[in-house]
Amino acid sequence: MDRRIRETTGARELPGEPANRRFHLVQAAPVARNIGAEARGLITSGEGTYVVDENGRQLIDGPAGMWCINVGHRNEILANVMRDQAMALTYSTPWYTSNEPAETLAEMLSARAPGDLRHVFFTTGGSSAVETAIRLMQFYNNVRGKPQKKLLISRQGSYHGSTHLTASLNGRPRDHDWMDGVDLVRKLSSPSVFHGAQGLSVEAFEDHLVDEFRRLIEQEGADRIGAFIAEPIQASGGVLVSPANYLKRMHALCRQNDILYISDEVVTAFGRLGHIFASEDVFGIQPDMITFAKGVTSGYFPLGGVMVSARIFDELRKSDHPNATFVHGLTYSSHPIGCAVAIRNIELLEDGLLEHAREVSPYFQHRLKTLEDLPLVGEVRGMGLMAGVECVADPSAKNPLNLDLAVGKRIDFHCQQKGLLVRPLINMCVMSPPLIITRTQIDTMVAVLREGIASTANDLINEGLWRQP
Image 1 (cartoon, rainbow, N blue to C red):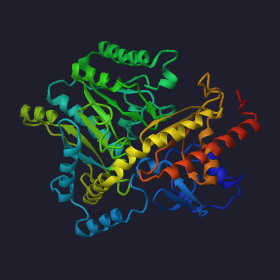
Image 2: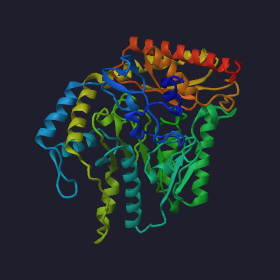
Image 3: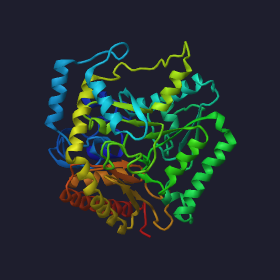
Image 4: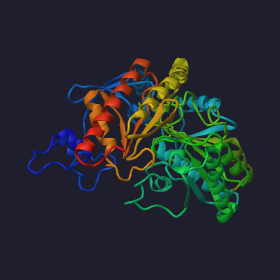
């Protein structure tokens, strides 16, 4: 078996093959049969929109790393910022000191966040950002004398993190098959029109989703629900875009029932949808908290955070509780290097990249949509510079169950042979390229993806795993 095919499909190393030093590294999401004995494809370098693999092959970085390399690879400006800040101040403890980059970045973000989100708590990434938001909700309601108001509402198809608490919020297929969660979470339906509407109009499906939330509030009691958390677009669920007014109506229900609305913008912020924050500029809502990470430093340094409403902090201060302490912090909160990189990254985004992303996004979406004429493709969906291609056994039935569920990995394998890296998600492929991508590169991406999907369809037919409808 070819090693690259093994790496792509997750197959085990064959008996008798030589040991590989790369087996010592445990990667994300290993399968039990391979854990501790798996070597994945090696990326050796990157520049701009491209990465280079161990064979010297140049690939368009379709996922932008992991939704994060927004300004592109090998940006010398950000690299120099990291060095300069490390030589000036490498670290300062967030527990009893502060630093200038963190304070400057906090001021910049407060000026760009919607509504009264004027405070920020910095974390190390998306999971710790969501964890912080949830713990702040718990602290907030305890101080208000509402200790019973702790239930968390998320949705099927969602992804919010990999800590014990944040992973409990996740609603993607297989997320909970082999892991335990906490009994504080209730999940609503995914807002996926493709799978969820089932003969309803989009407007009727939106009504159904909102009514479901209303019924859940009545069933559980508004006095027991602490927060509703939602990605504006469900990214790792397959780039699921909700009906037009859905988020506004969910936000209104939260306001009416004293439920905090947490907008998880770990993916959608910092240019992915053409704006620093998308909650208000794209979706018309002013949440109580926004969580962010990834694009805030374009992946050059691990950093995340939570933007928090001034109203929440005003209420906490007015309580004048003599003993209540928000005992929460991370060793690398407010890291000066990460904050310095984020400051310069935002300046780069606002120096033409946000405008470029808004300008090129319609072309990106239009070109990808042409893939729907392929018999294996059920839907292409997306917004801004993020898109998902979902493959199904029968487009009319929208059913992947009779399809090889490693189809995404198969497509990725074929695309890599032709110069494109995609992110495979079971029966889907996700693209979220660097914001610097050009129309010519988009054309190449779509052409390669078309060839990769066609080659995968031929493989499935030849192996007797799929019959073209």
